Length: 525
Image (cartoon, rainbow, N blue to C red; front, side, top):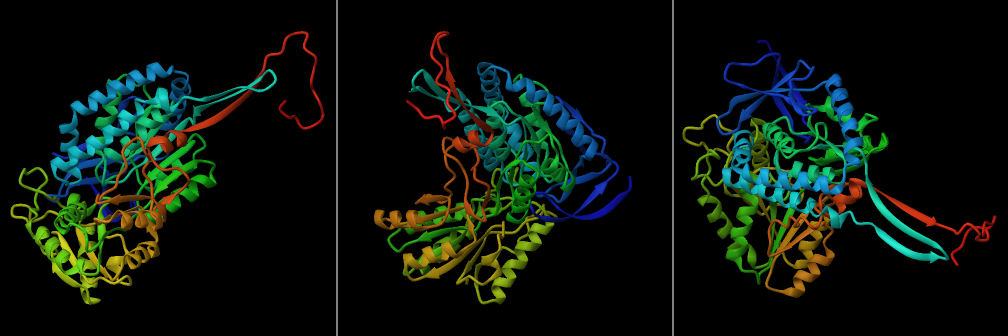
């Protein structure tokens, strides 16, 4: 086996120093594509290593697709889409119901695959599967969500009705932090509405996507309706520009989301691109500070902070600050960090060595700029996992808006505390930030909560709820640099994104009716 060192930017916007290989080491799993209903090694010769972040060891050799693989996948998708769109809704629903039961029964297997390649603890991974299942269940309501409208006798003898039809072939480009949940935010809605779906998962934790593909097949989904094509920028650009792709859903970093949206729309695709976040939680003096500290700690340090809805900034208002910092700091120190497969672990490693180095660097820059490091997780070493990519929970106090630790999306277990005097100051801080994904307020005042929810320029808001991910019957999406495109993901917006509307105006005149044709613009009457 020969190995070539490479530096590349992944589809979710992270820069990695990885390796591509032309072979496979002994004991390392070969991770293939899923094309037209079967595992497929593909045509491309390039490989990329997949790691276990808790041990630092290589566990997989991922096949990266090339142009020939892309063409093969999209041709299969196009054939399948034409047939699937004509399949009755009742038959589509039967597949969705079977798929829901299969995913539920394979939750632990999916969770184990997530933990092995992402690093999050098993209970968190199982929770990810459960949240994905909620969208599958929403998709099972398609007979209601796909109902059209009918207007009788809008003019004499004329009726108008509308319905929605699938786009055709749609692609999902998904991030490493939720290798099951985010694909399940996209594919079930796309498929139940009659589309063929091509998944391009993250190169870092791709194995769970293949189990999903097998479960779709077992559920009775026709070959080609759900496919998995691994790759890097070459495949992403191919999906964004190929004439056979009708729509693209993306979740990742803001720079890549903007690129995906601009490139895809320029080539005639419908695109929804969800970008990065800098989620703030405001804590007022009248809040239950123990409740706030509990939830802030969970929201900041769960999944090692690698969540687009993680709380990374606590905005402490007035007298709340000192007590809040003390309480959050104590909870951060009490968190058990370790291998995600260990039942005692509450938080696992970061995804790559680069992620670890980046978190350490940003904490160091904040300290140099005058922030107080209340809890420092930079030098954490887990016994028996010395080569793992671990950073412990970290709390920074007196962070200023000009600091890099505030301006950048750290995507690690770091909570920055910004102190302000009033609720109005807190709202100003949030609205001045370029991101607008999620935010929260902890308070005992209904008036303060109502003022906050009406004035902040953010798409998802929690009131005494730290991670306001909407239930599946609503839609997920932010504002500003956190979303490019008009449609949020899943829920009603998901149905509309994956379909196009038709409006029919019809008349059935009697054979002897007098013609009402006129050169004038037609009017109802």
